[in-house]
Length: 176
Image (cartoon, rainbow, N blue to C red; front, side):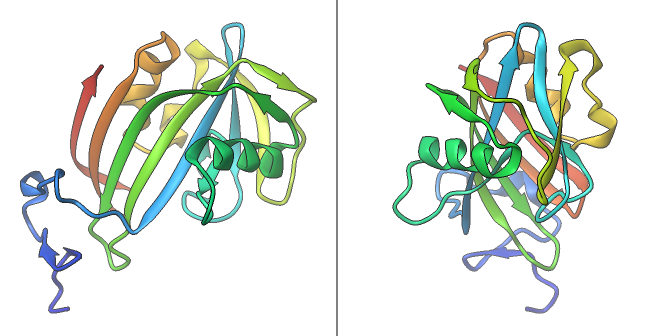
């Protein structure tokens, strides 16, 4: 591709701030689900897939025929072995990666405080409870520090981020 950074034939090389997000076309849809218990949040040490080695919330790809909410609940069940009730949609994140894969990821973010079971380690994730004021942002994706604190205080949001590998090149975050 002549070293071009493309999303459906749109060249983003050298101009991540010029992406027209109104016509941007994701090639993956995914979810994150933050489980809350008082002033603590359930996070995971991610073992597989995109972001392996990082701290994040449980989540993953939306499968064909699933809604974002159904996928979020399924991913939590698979990754940490708990059942979540009534998650609330908190935000939409759009990520354009400008590395070799050119991943264009649309992510729906949920929170929930109703759940059954005790989080358990799986081949995909090692869960742990973390106080809101001790979230290890230095072990997370760079965008997380922009929106997680507001989300944990109840704010809803929309954001767009451009990454080159793990390096965040550009961001735009709006509170609803």
